[in-house]
Length: 299
DNA sequence: CTAGGATCCTGTCAGC
DNA sequence: TGCTGACAGGATCCTA
Image 1 (tube, rainbow, N blue to C red):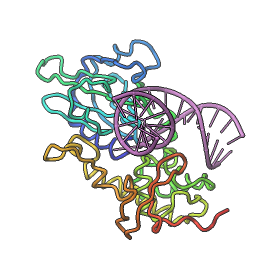
Image 2 (tube, rainbow, N blue to C red; image 1 turned 30 degrees about the vertical axis):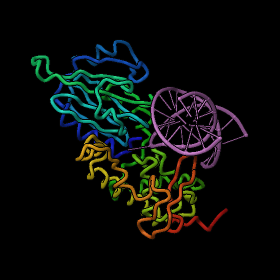
Image 3 (cartoon, rainbow, N blue to C red; image 1 turned 90 degrees about the horizontal axis):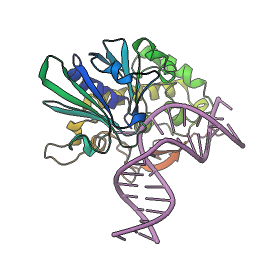
Image 4 (cartoon, protein in one colour; image 1 turned 180 degrees about the horizontal axis):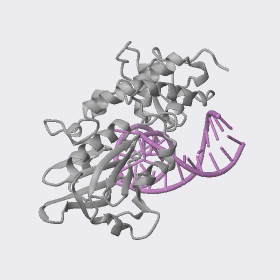
């Protein structure tokens, strides 16, 4: 689930909480959730100090001071929850943000602290209902060689990267625009929500073939994706803070944030037409049928 | 090259 | 209440 804004929100939260901490121990509740192409995984992790928390696309990277890094992908239902003197969590929003941990979704537990001080003890929980998410321990120097990262397209921010994005996507001329922007090798960080939001913003129908879009339209999609994702980060992404409202009831940040995603049956915020839900490339897709007209140039 | 389906899993919800 | 099927904020692999 978590897309770039959620992963960036997690990164910022964790950076404040865990950099400088030592990993005292690792508890593996689900073997497949944590892997290492070698032996002595726990021994490599335990005792290491966390020196940085980075992000590339939807991938989170925790650098350790022993030349290793923990590379994390939350996939659909992953989340990270820090429990120390304070509680913090981000990623896929579920009740595990607020409930007692570990719970049945907990896959890995990192016990953090400083060897010299008993007081700083804290735990970092990697929770993941569907077990699609993963953590890999790799040499820091080889992080960029992981296929997903090696092939990854540009982050959706800079003006220069617009050209890179257009160049990448033109290689997929006959593809529909929605699956094309979901492809991490074309542009990094877009998932199902931001794909729909970006296409609505740029007034492009998700089934439009790439070859039927002008450079200007592609640039508009790229720009919309960057702006919407930046706005989402500023808004606070998906965290405990946005999950629990001030009055203690559950709130969805999507409810407030999204214009079309999950809004089928409701009026388009731009023109009032009822938003429809369709299936495009196997994914639930939300459009305004008036703002996002299908391409008339059909081959 | 592209689409479409299956796969990795668990939980939830609609419908009968 | 219990069952069933569809679906889910991801990515990869396989087939046609």
